[in-house]
Amino acid sequence: MVLTERYRSLFPITETRAYLFAGGLAPAAIPVKAALDGWSDRWMFDPAYHRARYFDEWELLKARLAAVLGADPGEVAIVDNTSRGSNLAVQMIEPPPGANIVTDPTSHPSAVWPWLLPGRRPVEVRSAPGGPSSTRMAEIERLVDENTIAVLVSHVAPRTGFRHDLRKLAELTRSCGGYLIVDAAQSAGAVPIDAMDAGVDFISGTLMKWLLGPPGLGYLYARREHIESLTPPHVGYVGAYRDGGPDAPGELSYHPGAGRHEIGLADLPGIAAARRGLDIILEAGIRDIERHVLELTGQMIDGLAERGIHVLTPASPTERGGVVSFHFDGAVPLCRYLRRLGVDVWGYPEDDRVRADPHLYNTPGDVDRLLDGIDAYRRARGGY
Ligand SMILES: Cc1ncc(COP(=O)(O)O)c(C=O)c1O
Image 1 (cartoon, rainbow, N blue to C red):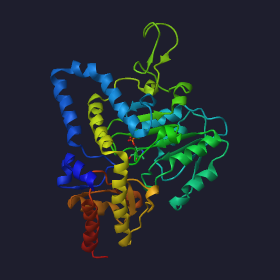
Image 2: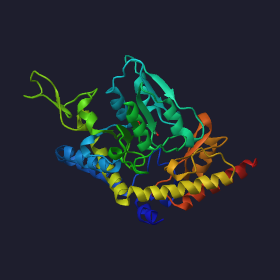
Image 3: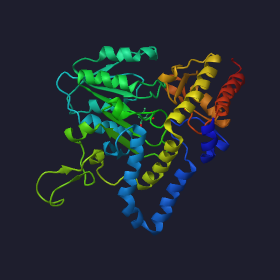
Image 4: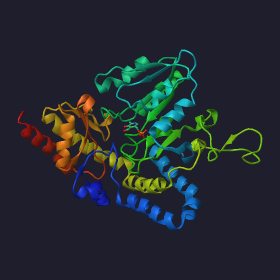
């Protein structure tokens, strides 16, 4: 647990709470909050300083995002959230008549709903049936055919914690001539991603979860070959220009790179803060973070299984990341109880499911607090 010893002190929440919900909203680290505070302080007396630094800050953030995603900075655009990134990717793709898209039911619908927008040519939505996660790839393979325009998955699924194999999915979509569109909201920052090398076409995600930034910022990765060949659905003065000036007649041109998707000024204080979150991730190293969260999620899965609790997350370390999901009768009251004990996890009432997502600042002791808390809740309820 060398990682935690170094990084726990950057997260004051760890002094009192076992915070196990990085996949919801990560806690502010000291340098992240300091960047936000520093931005506001300066804004009061010298806003021109911030305005002048805006594009530099933007580039610094993109360079770090590219490092996390295994991409070139020119393939990354900063947007406002995962859903925006997915919308941009999907809206650039014109489905031919009879096209289908393939997804799986544990993935977030961020990249599925944009296909259903009124006015777009309808596509057939094929969803791989549920079942053991180890057969998920075979199920997706079965649904993909020559009319598949895109495969859409959450790299790490928010409902089950299942981790897809992006390389295999990219091979599959290449073989049918479709696009692989990945939602990395629950994976980037917790497990390695090598977008370019794996052959992923688009990735969208958020900065506020595993990347330790503030809410209100996301990203879109677009594979180099798609940046020039597909037309952005939005346009603005940041990503586009007109020869001869904004009012000159003639065609619009886009700046090179995925930055063409950035249409106007974004969240300046957020950008300054998010960079510090990414610095923590990159300094800790994603391979070490992955090792760390896999140890903690493994400990959690074992402990839950010993208690007879139905865990939805696969036991195999190659099939999971930082998200653990389990069924519990009365998930919401359990989470309320745990919160009073200083343990933060999240309960979903619709299917009595609990999510617990440890990150680099958590320890085995935090996982023990969760497991002990569940024992105490069961004893207090007297039914176990
Ligand atoms: C996998 C996944 N995708 C997308 C989202 C939504 O993200 P955003 O609010 O950035 O659009 C979430 C939210 O938790 C998520 O878990």
